[in-house]
Length: 209
Ligand SMILES: O=P(O)(O)OC[C@H]1O[C@H](OP(=O)(O)OP(=O)(O)O)[C@H](O)[C@@H]1O
Ligand SMILES: O=c1cc[nH]c(=O)[nH]1
Ligand SMILES: [Mg+2]
Image (cartoon, rainbow, N blue to C red; front, top):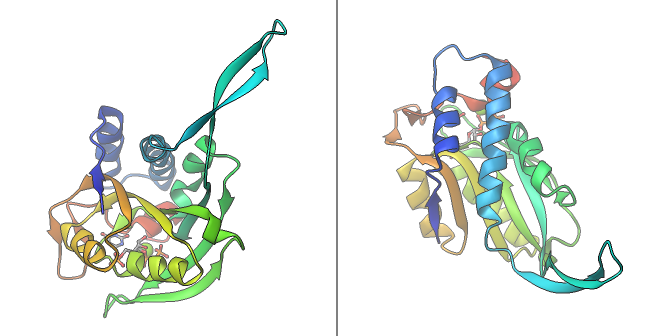
């Protein structure tokens, strides 16, 4: 598994703004979408292209590059993954969306799955999982299990903040999955929140604090 912490100045700046106490839901949503967009740019850097000949503006035939191979399905994890979705879709607007719903039980920290609506041809697509937080890794592991059960063989994940504990757990269970994150933070606290982290990303995005 490749873990890529994307230390682009724009990403670091925007993520830094998201860490401020008292940030409004409006600002948090806008920044989550913008960082999601920038992470998508990085995660799609290695997509294969092929040469296609087209007719150019002056009737001459010219070669252009088109993305080749497996198509993408974006997999936002409800709820908080929705906060990054429009930023991701701006760069890959033709991607199909496979929604999954999981939440963490606040006491046990175990993921509870409550919804999935995944594209039928997921076996032929690359899945791009989108969620702001990778904490214990339980939610991501359960999501990857679900996608693999449905036949998906190529999976990547985009996160705003990841904890070392969660990255290690995912790496152990699913070493074939590539992770792109705007930051690898210090650790989890006793309640399973990432430090320094962002707090509860879902609550901040939806104003349910
Ligand atoms: O790595 P883990 O320890 O599993 O935690 C990460 C999960 O927790 C948050 O979701 P939450 O359960 O708060 O649900 P929500 O998106 O509905 O707020 C977050 O968006 C991840 O999905
Ligand atoms: O720090 C954390 C951990 C899980 N979920 C969040 O929203 N934040
Ligand atoms: Mg939440």
